[in-house]
Length: 437
Image (cartoon, rainbow, N blue to C red; front, side, top):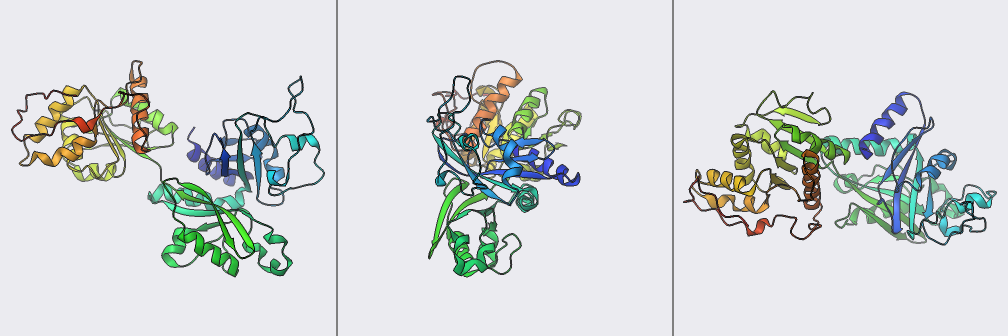
């Protein structure tokens, strides 16, 4: 399932068909949670739904209640996954475990029975709390358009989403500004930082409280995480926000269009990556062979400019099964180590070292390859066991994910320690294979 891609596609279809929908977004997690803040799910009124905000335990409840919860506008619900809920012999939740004011931000009705209350604690034993924002498609559309723009331009955008304004809308002295602080409103913080202006759900006249709050949010610096829960205190008003850096898709460039590339494309698309497949052999690089890939193209070996453009900030997998192709692509990649985030070469270690030697012998200064060699992973992928293209693809995706997310190898010795690769010297015989580590 391409979580974000499927949500964007279904949202367009629903709008074209005149079908209403609800977007459910995780805006905060506490304790153990299956999905992180920013995870989304779209529920259409005709029963269709895509995306996940949990491991599958919350989705049935959310699908059933989404439209009822949003009948008066956007609101945030809190779901608990503790183990303190009691069950009868027939497996049904027993009445008597009621929510408190801290369990739900917006209590839609006061006449709900105990069975409704019990559903807020799912008794899963995970001991976590998941805060979920529910909003109709009409108000969620600007966010989805922003996500489309990020994917199209490959430029991240930082957005702040209001989770809660403590008792603000109940203060009679400032009710004239209550519309400026409403659950689900979003601020483009990058726009504010660059232009000194704010795009907030189309509002042009902002209260001083909101304006001051945005100023504080604009100064907030996200850590390595792309989503964080932030509280801003402004006089008597305390607001809670999800500050989120909307990132472009991770990108994978595969140089080579053999049959073993097909499962790698499939696995990358399952994670919603942008995948490009290139090969100098036009009969291999066809859309018919790789219908799931975003880009499939025949690329000549001397077109280094296009190769560098396609590999910019991407993971690059060299797997053409052709010495001439791999040599040409690898030579360009090793000379530009700062251009990409990951580089892997298919084939046994001695084959890759032969390619490195053949590349270096034609250079007046072979040491220029050292940074690229240090970054090169070969043989490509973790050795996870199994046989065939699917097992190979699984190992490749595991290694790329670990590198792209700055994670260590899951199993000791399963990752090539490229830091131990010997430096290339200019007098290396092109036909001599270095002893590998």
